[in-house]
Length: 77
Image 1 (cartoon, helix red, strand yellow):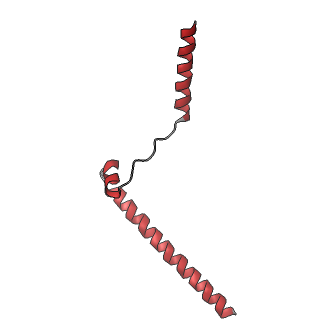
Image 2 (tube, helix red, strand yellow):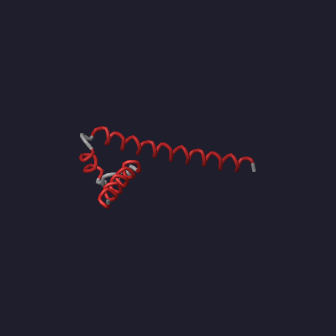
Image 3 (tube, one colour):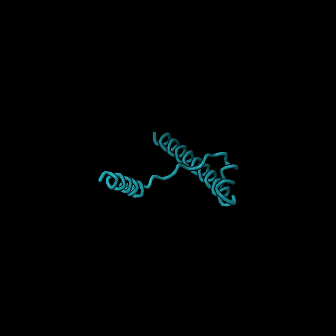
């Protein structure tokens, strides 16, 4: 029984190690591609990806809505 438990543990540890090495290799490859690219457009051309989504700046959006409301209220007088 002990031999089976040790064999299962060894197989599990080996599988985890192989998966981690494969994942790190993929990350290093992607990072090298990112570093070697001149700019974001060249990186996207190489990796065939679309640009990241634009971030939502809730403070800027709130200020814009406030200014538009102030303009509408000023015109109502």
